[in-house]
Length: 341
Image: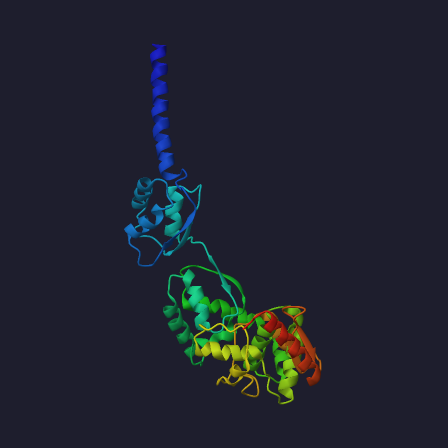
């Protein structure tokens, strides 16, 4: 009798354990076969959600069952969700219902214009570039500008995090806040002391950034040189402005490695070989260091600069036209010897 009772008890535990395991596996056990990100747009249907998850979940049937039980079809939030090993169906479904999506990393580089930038950025967003352009054009109009390109000065080179579902308004607000934080009382005072408008500061900063290749250690020297030329009424004669003028005409489809004499007459208000003064706007998105370099420009007597073939990425500076001619010939000889055209 005792033996029969023991067998019955063991059977009860075995059955309970079996169903307990099934319950745990269905709701809480790992159901991820490989890590990945599931993209769920705002207009997604239930089948689309299931299909997107299918490539990452191990047991599609249990995921679908839990999703139905929790009304995921009715109550989901758009986003980019990280399906990672260790997550069970309950946590996966709750993550999507709560909208606990993972941010994406965006690198804002020295893009020539805002449209070029958005073409890259929106590869990681739900909305496409045309929708972002439309949104930023609206924001620009509200600020009294012509279009999104006039917002270039609000962006700084850096790495940023955004959600896949970011809207143009949310995207811009992050940069607008950063812009307002950057222009503190100290920088505004230096802006007034410079005698330049903010647009001129950004235009010069973009030239400084391009000429320096983004290296901070020459920025203040280059800024001082161009301010010397500007205040003497000389043309700035910056090669990157010629490259920008050509790129604008070709929609950034024609890479320019070397500026030739034929390029110097390219018609554009940004071409500082053809026009005196500071260009009407920046020729690229800048970083904070280049703006600070203009605000804190080195006081020097330099008028000329030329790339230094002995230290690639750096320059030789001089106030002498004769010495500059020597420096320029050395650089041209180096270009020719390396067949750079």
